[in-house]
Image 1 (cartoon, rainbow, N blue to C red):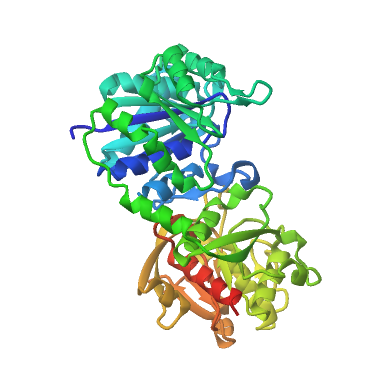
Image 2: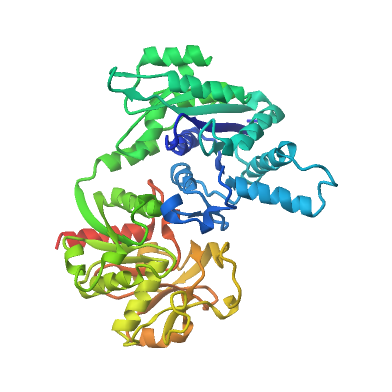
Length: 535
């Protein structure tokens, strides 16, 4: 094909409709047709990135290979499309405005009056174009965050309207996802909200080519024809998106409803679809017979999206182990020596994911102690790995009160601390280690068994590290340092020998797990949980 094609996905009526899932599903369908696909999201909030936002408010921060802190929807894109995204995959209003203002301060606009149009819109268009250039994608799918009619995303909508004009309308497709609500009093679905949403979009100069109707069940041909008539789209360009039990069934459902067919027709893409690999995934998902219960212990459990990638990685590991993973959500602040036994009764394994700050840390340490003393599989990620080191230092090495410099700068035993070259004034807006770093894996370890490789690469998001001053005492007391940076400076993973999985990883393996290819550490953890279940 000649030149990149662009698909822009907007949403209307209400937020939370699943625009990201529609975009990700379309990306997978186009990839199954042989096209190289890139995805990106334009977020309207004024933060430069989600890096300093509260996970309870925003959900998890997803980190790309090149170290960009991004919106959680990028996790959906990577899991569905199975392509590594990059720093050009997520743009916020805060980031684009800050870039414009930086240029103004440097005098790059040569004294011009700086305005939303053209300066903000031009910066946005440059970002979209750069993603296409970097990825060399055949199709770039761009989701516009927020809801049509909100003031926050108006500049992004104007930018994509201009972009379609710049590259040619024949190279762009607009998809509008909107709610078709069911009104129980009249026992029918109502199309008027969709009509109003499309009218609002048209008033901004954007005419949707495809309308995806979001509803709990199929709205029927008559309503689809009505929407097509009143919204001035082709009858087969109204696509039903219904609620499903499993997100990963969405690509097949949207294919059966004609989405990829009409997108390819409208963009003049000619290719054959091979659904076999995705159907095989669905077969594995539907073929699960066994169950395991995993306690997910954290400080942000009030919003499950705070650990979205961890949850999806657990589920994916379940697919490959032929089991359902039932998650027991545990607020770490509720765990004490007196409550631990009751909380973890019937649990087959424990996972402690990442986090920042001291709240709930003592409960996590007690959790790790309980797992170690009761021979339960344990998987510590980032903070969870540091918790494992602190617990072992306290209760096996007799370093009373061992902790992290993040929680107590004056502690006697700071087994977790900043590296010497990290000391100083570090801005809160940027963590020290972001993105992919290599790790050498020690022979004869659980890490080696899981990965089957001498060297790996994983994504990081943290400031504090294993304090090398305590390497000897911890190793002498049995803690295995199973993963080390190639230069020998940084401890990346620790583990405890035994028949069950007991591993802490400083990196975030959940970011590289895929539904059709689960991460080896999650796969090994769930396999160990199954063994515990069957004892």
